[in-house]
Image (cartoon, rainbow, N blue to C red; front, side, top):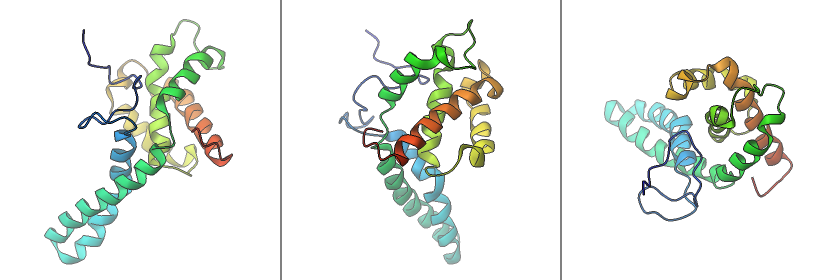
Amino acid sequence: MNNVKSPARFDEGANRDPLSGAPGAHPVGTGLGAAAGGVALGAAIGTVAGPLGTLAGGIIGAVVGGLAGKGLAERIDPTAEDAYWEENFSRQPYADTQASYEEYRPAYLHGVEGYAVYPGRDFDEVESDLRAQWEASPASIGLKWERARPAARDAWIRLNERVHQGDSSV
């Protein structure tokens, strides 16, 4: 039996840490939190001390940013989001009757991951970044941004509304 999961699919398990196997890990949120702000901020602060300060600041910023990303990611259950969209995809106005949920699944995941990177911001504010990330990903080969955008936006909006309503099961 092959235990390798497709990178375009949500983890159907217990969000296991890729290194320790411990349940409840959120490597996407942790990694995205680090990439989103911590490295840049730490590197900028460290630049005052020269090249070594930039490197050290980037590492420290990655740790701090990763912890911030993990905090939000702990509240996002990608398995529940996947189940919700799989059940509701066909009722969306952009759902192509010839397309399956499997085709749009990476776009929903992109919206979920994007929300973890840019929490509290409007989709429209960060759309250019999300589009660039999408177009650089292998998923864009099968689904261009114009078709992926509505699904990514819907996933984003759903998470944003649930967070602002105080839904602890996000």
